[in-house]
Length: 352
Image (cartoon, rainbow, N blue to C red; front, top):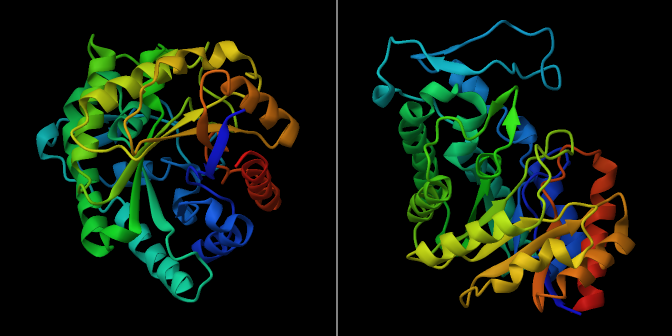
């Protein structure tokens, strides 16, 4: 049976504020976790949806399509954006995207708690950021994606630069969240349009090229990793992977092309996949020293028993890995948080 090395928290955690997140994680996991996110509290609670408010403020972009009689969580308008012709795509000026402001504020709380001994001294503050493709692929019409993406990428990389300037590098870890990329690669769709529309022909090459730019945006002395995802809209994927093959191909491609260490890569494991066939494509992974594999095989629905089945299946091809949930768990009820963290701890203690 594989050794379980650590707990990995993807990002969102349902607690009222960052301090509550830091305290409950530190209390339940202690030194079993290497990095703690702030839970993506506040406006970030529904991953990237709050970015639509920033797009609404961007001169040159306009909502298209008829206004629908419903909104996600009665808050987020689902109509996409298009260029309106008033501003050239390369001249788009996005407002403050909010990621740096949130990270800087949460870090102040993190470091205060660490100084008090609440958070272990060697634990880093983790900032989870969506890849530009996530926002562009979800919210921009296909015909305008390639034009708008460079401007949004610049704005997002500026957020990373502000974070790196404000937080000591030895305390920081940056995670890139890649979800829409797997809709592109596995030809999933949304609203009748495949995610792959507008991204060209060399899809894996395009994902890898973008990932290398994302890595380059993070200074070399800051830890960096990827959360690879098949979506989590109301705890459902936009497509169910047939196995970990596409995930493995992305991992191999990114690691081979990366000029720097990728400190961790987190992969989802669907709840029903406790069979060795799902994990078989991971047998060929030859990760360099310093790159950790984290498997999102914990599900609140089947607890220890289900996680143990998936650990056993993964152990047919892997001898060590970290564990976590498939995605963040900020959109589940708050009372689920403590039992989920306890589940992480129990699995690590049983397999360390």
